[in-house]
Image 1 (cartoon, rainbow, N blue to C red):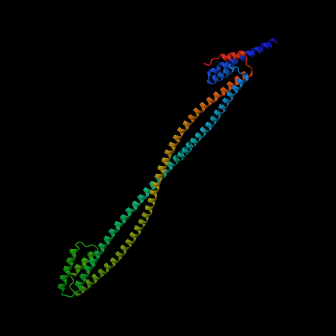
Image 2: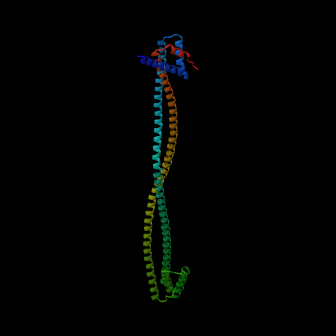
Length: 357
């Protein structure tokens, strides 16, 4: 029985010591000082324990409300921060995705641009070759025309000379008069054609022979020979005209082929150059998009980091305040337990002697 009493005494003494220790820690905080002042004031005024407990319950209720408000504020701020961070991260993700997509497009656009430029150069070169061919066949045709006209004039002159010789030889008059006129005509031809060629040689020989005709038989033979040569020259002119006409037809055919080909090439080159301009504009726009999205991602990343830092600091401060309120609630609860367990005179005295500073 004595042991039980002794243990009860020890427990009571231990509880009293703990209570005194709790009250001694109150001056360390502003809230603790407020609790201590309230308790000391109530006790010094002779208030009953129930009155002190009621005051402590009011303080506890206020602390609980503040704790709840802080906890609500903390949750709301966390939600707000998470929303802001999610929004910023969403913008960053979209900007990075668009940038990556544009960066994949750029090599393909550059490759297509080079291909179009090379195709345009090939078409340009082909068009230039056609123009060179056109210049060449035009120059060749002009030369052929000139050669044909010169040849025609030459043969026409031969025919004229033969015709005049024929008139002289077959004309009326003495042999001596005939020979004089024929000789003059021959010399005139030699002067105009000092180095005859082809039919010119035959004309020269006939004109020379006409100067030596003395008998009617010789004259008749010369005239027939001259007429035969004239007919031969006429036939040659017909053949050369057909050849020149065929050359003209072939020239026109080749020229039309080249002109048509160049029209097609010019249209292709114009289309390719338009595509090149469009691709160059696309490359500029895509490059600008890459830089823009890179800048957006950088700005939003900094904004996100700032938000994270701000939210972390605010959460840390709110948690510190919340933890402080939790500590305050625990302190009031501990003191309420002490008062509800009974307040000895010795404990009253000890509480009254605690200094606030």
